[in-house]
Amino acid sequence: MGYDILFIHPPSVYDFRKRAFFPGPVDVTVPIYTHQFIMFPVGLISIAEYLERHGYKVKIFNLGEQMLADPTFDAEKYISKTESTVYAIDLHWCVHSQGAIEVARICKKHHPNSFVVLGGLTATRFHDEIIRGYWFIDGVLRGEAEEPTLRLLENLEKHKRLKETPNLTYRDRSGRVRVNPLQAVCNDLDRWEFTRLDLVTPNNLLLSFSNEEKTWNLPICRGCIYNCVSCGGSRYSYKKLFGREKPAFRSPFRIVEDLQVLREQGIRHIFLFQDPRIGGKRYWRMLTRSIRRENMDDLSLLFELFSPADKEFLKSFSRLGAETGFTISPESGVESVRKAHGRNYSNEQLLRTVKNCLECKLTLSVFFMIGLAKQTRNTLRETYKLCEDICRMNLHSELYGRNFNVWVSFGPMILLDPGSLAFDYPEKYGYRLIFKKFKDYYLAMSKPAWHQWISYETRFLTRRDIFDLILQSGIFMVRIKEKYHPYFHRGLEPDPLELAELNLTLFNILSNEFIAEEVDYISKIEDPQEKERRLKALNDALLELNTLYPSTRGMADPYGYRRALESILQRSAGLMTGD
View (cartoon, rainbow, N blue to C red):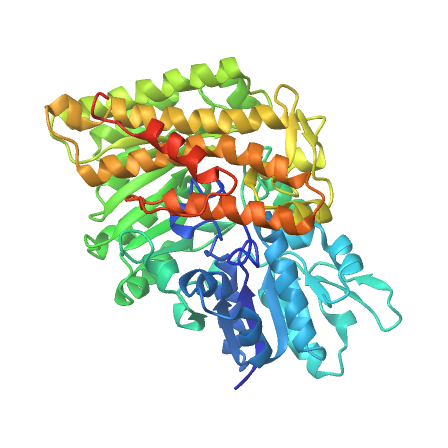
């Protein structure tokens, strides 16, 4: 059965099942999407639905999820047996650089007469390099792509009149690269649909990876008014790459419709991304009133805060009926470091927001980052102190029997977003780029270990410093989970499963230094077969022990990797026991 267009969401690394692969903490802030980042940009849904609305036969195939869910699935065989006029592969997040290219290569290999096109933020930023450097890619659709993809299909039907397709970068018949102008962006997000999950195959892991609860993401708006320097979705980036001058909003009425449709599909956990306050007070008030009227107390809703929130705003959201929470990302506990990153507010304002969320019975996740331009080991120590202040506030509330919480987390910035201010003007914003071209991202993601993917340095931190601080912050998080766990303060015995999970987390963190050293040593070996044998042995030893209940059975250990990792595992035991 043929398609007019088959959208393929690639894994971050195409051959991750067949090679040694050490992703480390790359997915620590989005663990439900795994190290293969199986969540795709929600714009794929709106593009696919818009094309179907116009009579085209479409499908979104989540290749990353299928490869992860089924170890025996033959991705190349599947692609070879499909038939589609167009194969469209998303390259939005740069973590998919290797996977997107390899999937495109396979599509062209088996379907030489089909049109292979890439799209997304990273593809847009590197459109010229991609179209010149990878002959099997026929085009890159830059920017926002609902209307341009429709024009592409129409023009392919008209004897490949590609010059009339907006946003398209391609090679003409003479081999010359052509860059068509960007079309004006759509300023009414109500035109698009974001809940047509029936267009996606498969979606079992994507929708229910966390505690078997189905989850999905919905946009409040498209675009941003902030310029966080490392963000590829900043106001600067949207204007430069997409031609968008201001955010386009989805009306509260349509958002409520989306929530109702998702609920009918059995989806109860919904993340509404972008801060509703961007739309102004009238907008967020209308949104809360609209949700409250529909009696959605069986839903769990999560919103973003891009700055501290006042009590009036939080009280309004606390009355939605649904279980409601927020995320906020101050990035650093030091105000000058935070301000340099584009977040201009004080610790006092942040702590007041924490207090208000606790009083309003709202959950709050507070995210800090490793890799900020003005970050040093000293500023990180100050950040740890702020984290503990927040944890103490949360613990005080828990001890009084309230069933809600505020928590902190660290997100490592391993890959700097292409198209961000920091990427385009690194010296101005305190960065030094290690990866400057798309090829750098592609080649790095082809390497086995995450420390080889760190794409930048800062004025104060080398690549090795960034690696060390990522691990240090991970250990800190394990220790404060232990220190501020309610079990201790209520005189209870810790849950054995929770204890095992925490011990495993510590093992994963501590093993990274050993793995990085071994991978660096192995990379210098000239014999490719010996190199592969050692990488496989290291990978097998890690997989053998990286489980809640590691096997004690003997296994071949020619290089001593299992023995070394077992020693690290022993050091990881004893949390919440006083050992």
